[in-house]
Image 1 (cartoon, rainbow, N blue to C red):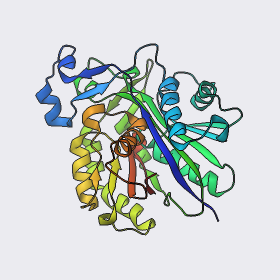
Image 2 (image 1 turned 180 degrees about the vertical axis):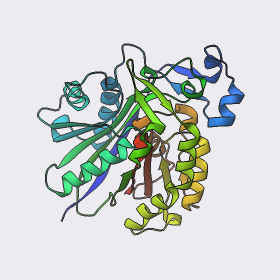
Image 3 (image 1 turned 90 degrees about the horizontal axis):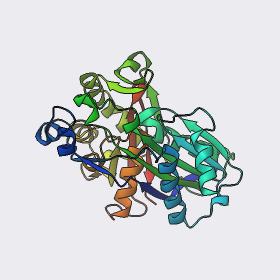
Image 4 (image 1 turned 135 degrees about the vertical axis):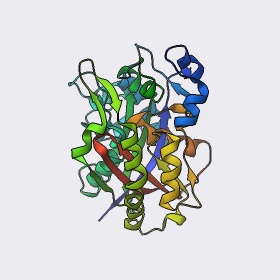
Length: 312
């Protein structure tokens, strides 16, 4: 049986930066209040003329270039997003059209903040089963479109962006077995619903679940890859907020790992957060080719998915 690996990654963020001081002019908040509660300093916000598929296409183009591949080398495009405005054409088709992929299979996955790791597992399965040879996997969200800019408990969290990975067949497995699941009866804890759609969450419920229920699940993902957490070079968790990331990383037991903290710069970008943070670690040289990295997404639907991957 063939395996799969991540050949390259890439990311993209809009140029506009929204600071905590900027937010203090919109709602009753302050830089100190935001930093002390969620650890976020800034976030990138897309303009009205920057749709989700444009963010996704920029990240995808960077990943393709880093892999040394052309658009026609890709035969499957997967986009994880929960902020698509239209139902059809789907986001994957729009990205394929933007960057000139001629005839790929195109699918969107909506698992909110755990979307990218679900999509990565789907790409791995497709390659292993012989259904695809090279897959473009993208996490992209424009959370500013669904933010309630009058609610200081949620609008301070969100940002926009995209991250992408090229997955290809490999003689050795560079993407470990996925461990995934959900708590569907608690789906109300994180929501994007209504007309117009708005993001809302029960922050304390999410915090307790993430910091108490997820550490053993993340450790089991390491076990499935045949690794102890202390052997990890890096841990890239969904960038929800630092009050979740730091205790969760500590409870996993990855004592020697670099812990991604891109949330401080980018805010919560939902499905984009893991590939965005992962790509930045690679770009900045904080991890090296072949390093073992735990990717672990969690959030909406109280869904989770994680796997250990080899750094491209």
